[in-house]
Image (cartoon, rainbow, N blue to C red; front, side, top):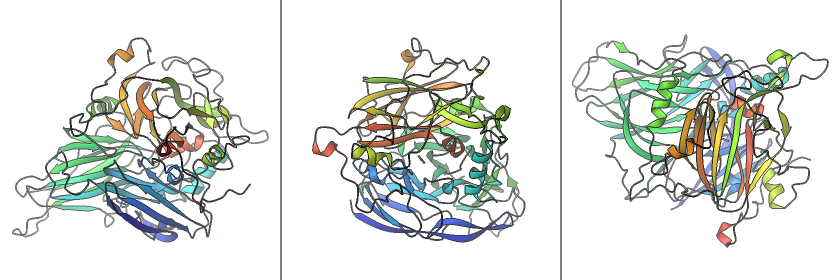
Length: 547
Ligand code: C2O
């Protein structure tokens, strides 16, 4: 591999969508941000310079960061934020990884506008495990707020209620023709009849899982989260915030007498309000021998907003290749088993205030009822220098502190406990983790993202996980390998991973609202005995915390 240098200048620029002009935080003035295309094994060196008022960090979503934990990026976990006027160089390799990943801000809600694709091509001479596409097209789904996203979450946290929802979804930053005042802001994909296109889909939306489909076309799914899967055809995909999917679009063999919309709209399982709108782009067939005529515009039939059966059907089809060239490395044996509940809860309302959450409380969210509080210094630094005192504690609850039943009435006491609690794992621990959705403040699908590792989805189901009967159905042959997977609404997800990467690794719901409410925890993975199993010292320019 080669070393590729980039400079990310964090700057403001004006952007107009839906006839609203506002100042947004960007990288190099671009929205969406710059596309990075590298080859497997390349090293990336990205100097990020902060020219805006907001504190910021950049996360390289899905990059393993083996022995480069200081470059992972979540604020207060692996680094303190880059303050105004400061800079930080992220330095990491793509060795052993190929596919569609992305990068985004990992501070407050800045990733609303600070995101871009990170495409890792296979090593030179190594083909895809499918026919070579004619062209490759990144498609980033996003979410547009007419308001300032940082102000939206600050207001929600202050009042305790749900935040204002976004005003549009976007495709490559453009809302498309189904919104008022947006027809000219439409992403167009021109295709030639008979050709195959690789669409590299990324869901960068802040708070919504999305269905995506193309009118009158099925696509072939070949990869998710930068891991190849056994190809299968789908009318519509579901893609959660954080996830990526590569699909093949086979353009019709002859010039069709229509133009086709591709569109995305939410899969919504929560109780709260959400943006119930549809973003669209236009698939245009290009035939140079034919005069352009006004073609009828067809819309895709997307699943309905709460079509969980469709989602289950789709996710059950995701299987890793598990062949000689791309074997599955799912751990066959387990060293430690964990059972974590994920869901919403509440915080008390401060006295002399009125709060807009449930029964006058404030909304919160938790893992095993522990709602994670960011430390005031970087957790990884405290771990590296063995100075956890006052920064974090290692008493993350092994099991949920009280029983629950997703079909039953929620407990009277919905208050979460607050703290900066981690689980410490010896190097190379093979972990099985069951994530159980709770009914404590309504059931909901939570897309859980693990930093620093990929995991294998060995099982999922509805209702309460049964530790006696459910494991017998686990797939240890070709489970899909991912970095983000949805815990089914009112159900459970079983994953396995090997903790072979020393560092401090955030695991959280990739719905930013839930992340902000505390649905996150940290795995601290200790060094192994060999030199190449140790976390190196922090880079000299690691942003320092003010404390
Ligand atoms: Cu895509 Cu913790 O992030």
